Length: 408
Ligand SMILES: Cc1cc2nc3c(=O)[nH]c(=O)nc-3n(C[C@H](O)[C@H](O)[C@H](O)COP(=O)(O)O)c2cc1C
Image (cartoon, rainbow, N blue to C red; front, side, top):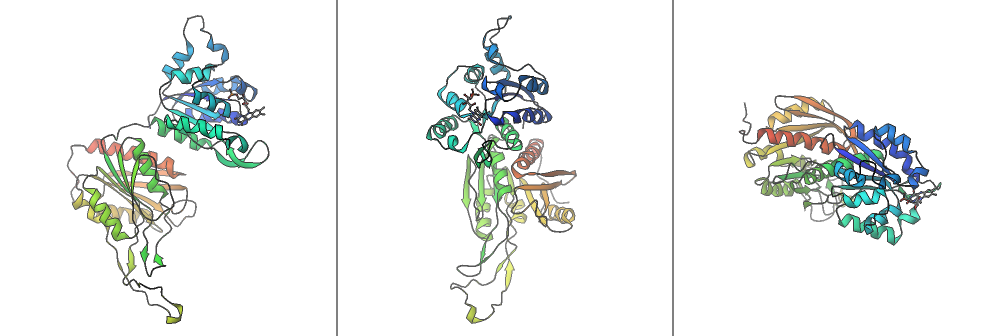
């Protein structure tokens, strides 16, 4: 992300407007400068004074449409000042005005004059949200590259529960930072593996693990947002491909190895976030194993070690592995880092149910040769992916031109 960006926060007239106060605080905590624009309706829900005090700047209101004494056109200077315009909450009414390009108040006039990234956090009653007109306006705005975050299902102001609640503030801040993202990986190819593998036992049964693929998908998304060409090799997962990412689906560890080996030659960065099964059944029955045939005796054999093979295959790529451990996490990870001669290893404890496998969150320690461990406390995998990509991209810049590490 780009620290210290100028964020113009538009606040419109919905119940969720009160959350804009906390959003200003969170954006400022992340080092951004925030100025607020309120619609006339928003002032019925939250006072300009609150946003003025929290942002440390006067709030742009309707009166500002008139040039002030200096003759400055404030909607133009606000649009020039901002690196990003975020409207949170955005009402159905303002979504329509933005989609149509209307310019009938300070917010919409500034939006029309503004050419940077636009982040929208809609919030409204489910019935409004489901209207074709609202969805149509949203599609128009997405087609113009607006970043839409939420809404989500939750408690609504009407007392009902349903779709239409504004996305949580962490997701909005994350979307803002992804939208601001450095395009520092333009021209680079990033290869990411994600998810589990499945090792068949018979036509209906397999050995696998609980990896959801979320961490790898989040890393692929974060790399694509920075302008990289991203290829994602995914085991069997139930996740949507992030925008701008090419995806190759595989099932077994050997399929994953073959696909990765083929793609690794072109990669500048290889991130192996998949939880590849270490073992597979030595024999695969072509018919379903029957209970009446008695207890099957399973014998296993080792799967290929994809990470270990990458050094020879892609000596110039930045190679990053994951160590999902259930005890002595850091020690095990340090061992893997050295044995596989990686540039980074991301250690996480998958024995905890609140992070790691099958969770939306993760807490990790990043190890690298000759660098102090970096700890990332529990946070969403999407937020963590952005920070990990900061680290990898910085390392890529530093080693550009430098020789690949050698064993020693
Ligand atoms: C109590 C109350 C709550 C409202 N909440 C919402 C809302 O959550 N989302 C929405 O789209 N409109 C909501 N509205 C309707 C908007 O305030 C109305 O469409 C207004 O014209 C929006 O103007 P603006 O988009 O310029 O701020 C609400 C209206 C009232 C009276």
